[in-house]
Length: 139
Image 1 (spheres, one colour):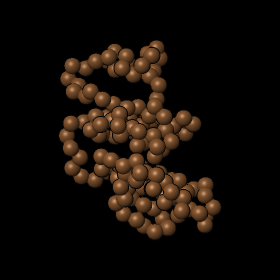
Image 2: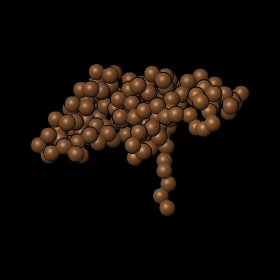
Image 3: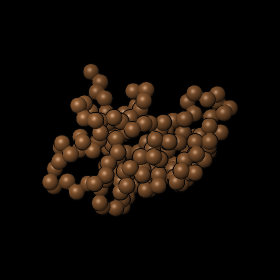
């Protein structure tokens, strides 16, 4: 039996970074679990005195196909390349002659939202970094 997965991304400003990832992935804010009416209410219910986080963001794919994404606040800086990264596969449904242009349309959209290009592998993928420096690929 296959299991569903959720991903956690460490970052300094989860609420701000969530806006970038919602644009990148087409995700939405995930509602709090029942019976809670807000995320703040849910977080307060599980209050941990040793937890120094004061921000977090929960995102999900509105179609239910993709994994849940939790943006988790951490205090320490990012010092190295992350070992797991996202591949945002925007060109799969495009006709072969439009695939590279489709990739670059998404790259342009994400650059306007604060992402930056780290490397380009023509006709295959573009390596980018989000506003906090987390690497991912657009292909």
